[in-house]
Figure 1 (cartoon, rainbow, N blue to C red):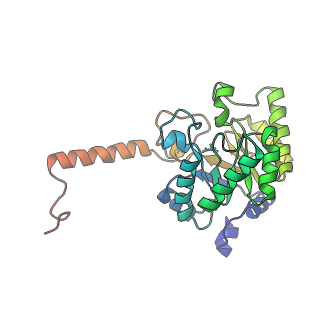
Figure 2 (figure 1 turned 180 degrees about the horizontal axis):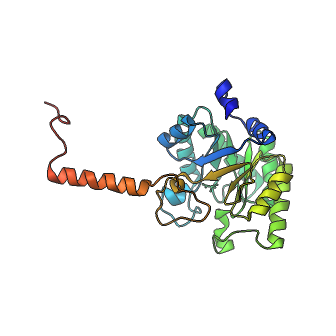
Figure 3 (figure 1 turned 90 degrees about the horizontal axis):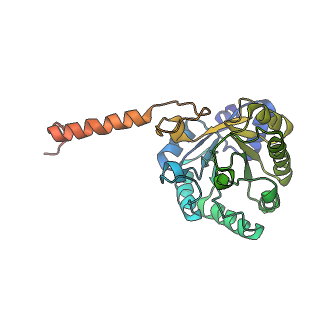
Length: 273
Ligand code: KIV
């Protein structure tokens, strides 16, 4: 992102808006720990999401539903400590913002105050629009999330593509307009048909960040563990693997076991005398 490299300026929500205006793609990946966040920041990622996907890839849960606000605060603090340039977005957990606007404001405020994150992300459309409006109004930037919203998995009943039928596509489109009107600075579009991703991206002034939403979104996001090839049994069509870390890690662990068992580790050079 030339803007940042030239000026060493911290990326802001305004910068993302400028990028959309210039047709410059926005990059976003997840991080839940210090080193990953530091690597992402070092290579110039614009947005780091401390996603509640940590419920899956860190905690081994089936869904993101059990993740607690305390756990998100813990991981966001760690990530924020590592990051100088990127925007750090913290996911609001299931039931931390759905009960009512007052509770949502308190919880968003807590997350921002205790972690130092730059923004929060919330899943949903019309039913959270007023909450988004109030949270933004008090000074907390909000990223929306539409399409496949994993916190509603029990309502959907599956992780299938959303918005294939006209009614649902129209609803996702209307919700995106509503979120923009409510003051969201960007919207994640997850697992929707590419033409719908394009229509929303072209209709909104704020950037869209796609995950399985086609090439016309203003930016793209993946779960870092998926793109690194760490989750062997999860390879949906929208994940491109940029590494094969599961194989590499298992191979390194096996080598270590072999070397300890055979007595070749530690060597004299690796010992103190
Ligand atoms: O929790 C997460 O990692 C997310 C991304 C899939 C966008 O919400």
